[in-house]
Each structure stands twice: as C-alpha cells, then as structure tokens.
Image 1 (cartoon, helix red, strand yellow):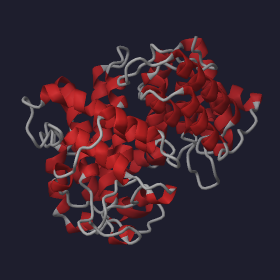
Image 2: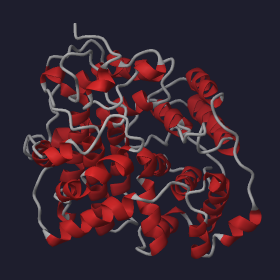
Image 3: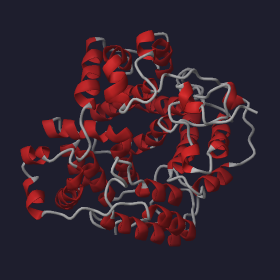
Image 4: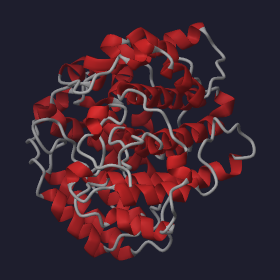
Length: 438
C-alpha cells in the first residue's frame, strides 16, 4: 500500500489518462524503480539545477503501457545521470515545525532531503488533504510562498505534485513539497501577486488566452522584453524589461468559479495550440522545449480540480495562475506567430498506440516527449464534448488536429538529446542549427 515513505503503484492507479490493460508486472517495476530513485537521488542531477525527471518519466510511460523491460531500460539510463541524495539532519528536520525556521532554510538545495523527511512525517500524521490545505491554500505567509515556488524551476515542482495527486502517491506529494521548498520564490512578488491585484481592479474580464496573446503580439515593449541568451528568461529577461506590461496583459486571464470546467479545457487546449504552431516557416518542424512544459503541466489540473477537499475559490485561483504562467512562458520566448497550416497539413501515419510507444522508446529523451503526447491525447477527450459549446478561440485545437500533433511530436523529436527540441521558438538564433523545410 502506498504511504508517505513507500511508492506503490497498482493497475488501478490509472490516473486521468492511461491506456487499457495496464499490467501488474509493469506496476511492480515502476514501484521498484521509483522507490530506488526516492531513496538514493537528489532533486537535481547536476550543479546547474537540471531536474531529476525520473518520477515524471516512469509514471508517464507506465500510464502509456510500457513493459517492465522498457521501464527498467529507461530507468537505468536515467539512474546513471543522477546525483546522490544529501544526508538528513534530524535537528534541522525537527526545527521545521516552527514555520519561521522552515522559511530560513528555503531555496537551499542541500536541505531537500530534510524537507522531504519533514513532509513525509507531516503527511503520515495529518494526511495529504490536510497538508495540501495547510501548506498550499491556507493563505499564510508560508503557504503563499510554497504556492509561488511550485511554479518555479519551469513549473517542475507543481508537475511533480500533479503526479503525486493523479496517481495517489503520498510519497511523491511529499517530494513535490520538498522540491518547492528549495526553489527560489520571486514569481510571487514580481508576477503572481501584482497580476492578482491588477485583475481585482478590473474584474470580470472575459478575454480568452488567444485574445490576450493577440493583444500582446502588437505591443513592441513586450515583444522586445526578451532576448536570446537571457540567463533567466523571467527574472533577467521579460520581468526586467517589460514587467508592468506583461502583468497588465496576464491579469486579463480570469477564471470565474462557475466556469472552471470551461476554463480548464481552454487552458489545456490553448497551450497545445500555441506550442504546436510555434514554428519557423523556413526551418524543419520542432516543438519548443520551454513551451512543452506548459502543456505537460496542464494534464494535472484535471486531477487538482477533482479534489473534493480543495475549495472552489482555490481551484479558480490555481487555473488563473497556470494561465498567467503560460502567457509569461510564451512571452519570454518572443511570442512566435502561430501557423495553423503546420498542424492542418501534417500527415497522420501513426495511431495513438504507435505514437505512445514511439514516445516512450525514444533513446535519449527523459520523458518530456511521452508527457507531451499523453497530455495531447487526454486533451482530446476533455475538449470533444465542449467543441460545440465554446468559441473557436477558446478551443483552437479540434477534429483530427490532436492526432496530427501527436504524430508531429514523435516525428520531429531528434534522436540526440540536444536536437529533440528548439529552445526559444520566437528567436531566429534558436533555429540556426536546424535544417530547412522540405
């Protein structure tokens, strides 16, 4: 049975989207490798804060039907790259029960193991619902900081939280809270909080994400607010050069509490659209590495919205934060113009089962590709019933575009790690290493 210290997947842990007939053997294997990962590896795999993606990778390919042999093979490839976990310090862990002491150690990666132990014990004592409410949604200083940090590190902590919630794994929820605790918190004061204040001053915005993007593209200050090579695309880039304008636009995305299902579908559908259409018309097709994170996070918002213990107002706020973060990520890569024809004209030669297997058998990707196609397949199911109810600018992906995007994703992912994605689709410099359109 799954616990705060034990990862235990069963064929019943299908999440919000999976293939049929998940095997017990694969469930045992993914449980085994994730337990080994938790007990032996650090949060970051190198000194420049590249994340350990093993949880994301293994649970995604499990849900897509990977065999035990494939899970083992892909785990061994990733295991070799990881840094060892730091030792725990019991006196430091004990001090975290004082929230002021807890906050003193935040944004210090050497304390990841201590935060993990703390949250494992908190969940063991109180349960996941109580920990979620206290450390994310209570509104106190610590909860507000943790919530903001969940979106740091290119949204990795909240992706990790999503896997823990979706697959009902308290240990992975503990990992996610520990991850957030050792990430930097600048998005709160510099972005999320002022966007909320601006939105409150102009309530009842009915702008779709696509409408907001159209407005942003015409603003030269925003367009010139990012530069290829920015060390931190947010803190050193767009939020330094065009912060007030970006906040002005991002605050226009709002989620009324009675429109959560529609706004959830719009957020997911739109993220897939602007990611798939962010191409260079003179270059071979590639998906943007930063944009796919907005897509890969999206699937978990269905799991978050289904939680009975989270208040409706908190759910609404969470989707607002996600949509605003999407706009920030997009603006930080110079807002490439979308080209629908790149999707509409793409040939379908693989069905979903073949798309899934091609994604999880990739020889050098660390799970980003599999996460992307799983989210696209899920979004198709979520969007279909709403296609006749919502405006096309709220659901720009429809019909057979879903499978076209799935085919595009696996076809265009290069074999060598650094050729899988383009990094900064709006910058001409990011495309120079890729070949021309054929």
